[in-house]
Amino acid sequence: MQKYFMYVFDTHDKVVQRFEEVSQQPPTFSPQRFAWIDLPALAPAALDPWLKKAGFGDADIAEWVRHREAQGYIHRQKMLLNWVHCFRIEKGHIYTAPLCILMTSSFIVTAHDTDLAPLQQTHALCEESFHSVGKTPGFIYFLLWDQMIDSYLPLFAALDGRLDDLEEQYLFGRSDHTVFEQIIQCKRMIRQVKQHITPVQRIFRHLVNSKLDLISEESVKYLQGFYDDSDRLVNMLDVLQERSHTTMEGYNSLVSQQTNHSVRMLTIITTIMMPLSLVAAIYGTNFSYVPEFTWRYAYFIFWVVLLILAGLMLYLLRRKKWI
Image 1: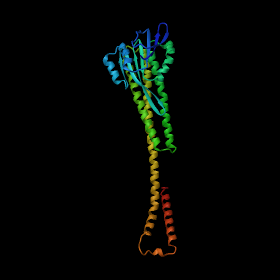
Image 2: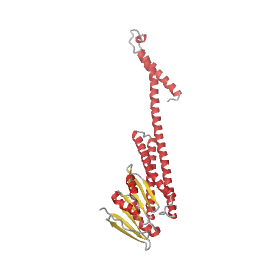
Image 3: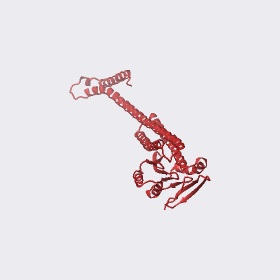
Image 4: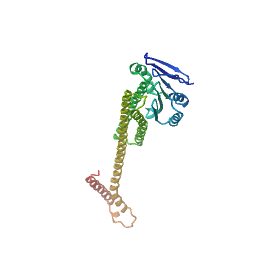
């Protein structure tokens, strides 16, 4: 059996006890002596006993099992279940990991397959927070979401900084295909983050607008703050998406300018060479009698004519401000 960590909070004596359990049978708790259970596994075998203890029926459990790879929520009057994704950016890539949060009036359960930074920070802060503000399992719920929302900000800053770097690269002359691929990758990352943030916004909107017995009026104020934060995060992502579009348009504009410049240079060269090619073609014919062939200085005169034509073409092009 897999071990899990459990904190038991006694609201009467303000005492916190930490256990490392292996039993699969959920203990009994109460609002005066509630618990936080942290399960290092998202498998139904690990979480189902706690779902049943919270009062979820087979249909609700089946819905969670069916959608646990995505994100969503089930909210009841005296229980709630959220399953979301935490993510981090590392070496230019975004990695996501699912997190399930189950809460009743007497216990809160978190289940995850990998170590998550917000959970580790919650472990470090839960005892101190309990002594100051902890009254119900909701304080763990709020503490965890506070850490999760804070963890999004460095990710947003990294994406914003990456767009700045890409803009500098193509503005200072680097416009190869690598820059284009990096812009596409950054756009994909922003879209991926937005897909994870939007369900969080829906969770808080529903909690704020639903009058659940589990959520007190005081707690609704905190949830409203989280909802406002998630709304700001979505707006920030909209700005990042717009920036990524602008970066792509700027890159395409620069590439188009470079292409136009190259085409214009080729056109200039072709325009200059056309009269020269005409003269060379005339004197390259195979007629038996061409009078100029008998001139003593015809070859030098030929070159002088070519140079004069080339100079005249350059003068006309410069006058037209092509060069």
